[in-house]
Image 1 (cartoon, rainbow, N blue to C red):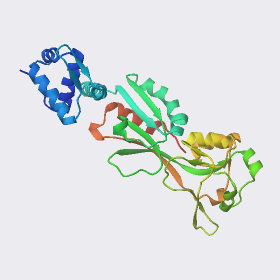
Image 2: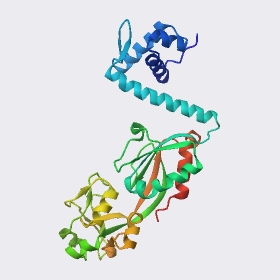
Image 3: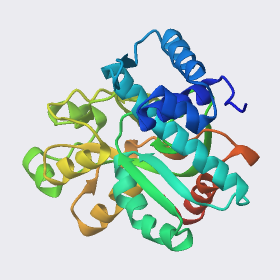
Image 4: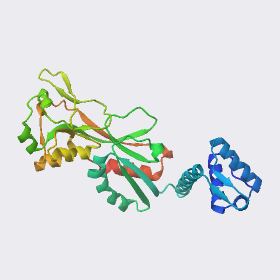
Length: 302
């Protein structure tokens, strides 16, 4: 009598079949197992998780709150496994659902504009895009690719560099007219310095003085923002001075919406953008490899 291997995926499959079939006996028939074997496997799953997943009665079974959550996750995981098997069986043709998490400026100014072109090349791939400047856990968020700016933290993840851009201090012309143009970094003490609400690699703005020595000016302004695009918009609105990647604000500088300041004290540091993902080589899903190659060929951050 055939039966699934007693492993996590096998346990999930049996559990989901029980819910779909509505009873242990119906699930057992579908899986070619005995009802007692199905019942014991579900009981072992509950014991391993340390949670009761089902409420049993003589007439029906019902999911507990823990069971509802586990069932939803199990269905998604089994669907992903099926998709992976179909992808492998079809010669690794790019298809399936691609989950992408991007920091907000890149998502709004680069990624969204490229998605339509990506669909033209790979019509069998669907893209689920989430924009946030929060640092996420790819496994926890079930993301295939995360696009992040700045230094990479040590991890087991793999990264592909998409480009880098020089940092620049900018402010709106009307702000500078009202508050004056800072001549040296110390003048920033009299200005609103827009800052991020999340931890940065360097806590402050770096400069070089006239002797070439490094100087860090803290931000600690009255305005805190959640992402780089919000900071750009706040700067354009005249709320204060911002420090952003040149690629992000070049169109605003060209249009006169923002003006670079303190350039003679700019240390010339650059911010890199990477696509971070799990897996590599032949074990990388075709849809992920296709997306990474597409980004490498089409993204410019000069």
